[in-house]
Amino acid sequence: MDDNCKFILENNGLGPAVIKEFKLVASGNEISGFKESAYDEALGALGLDVGHVFYHPSEHEYISAGKQIDLYELIIEQGEDLAKEVAIIRENLKFKIVYTSIYNDKDFEYFGNT
Image (cartoon, rainbow, N blue to C red):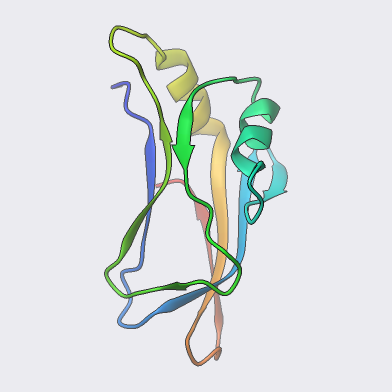
């Protein structure tokens, strides 16, 4: 397992996706991802205090077709061994995203971290 820990949101659809719900799920605890403190709360629930960069979408935000957004990346300093932390995050941090099309015709749900 490498030390990289990065999660990317990508719209592979034909048109824009509208974010209706965005939650972080840390060991079964759901945390609203629409707030600034969401990632710190999620990592705290996992017993981790690590440097990271993140993005949290807004409710009703449009994600264009083909667009990629970096949701989360663990910051690893040169020579730092965070293999344990990476394993904990990969196993226990999930994303729950509910989205719809611009026509608001049907909701879709994604749950996971791959």
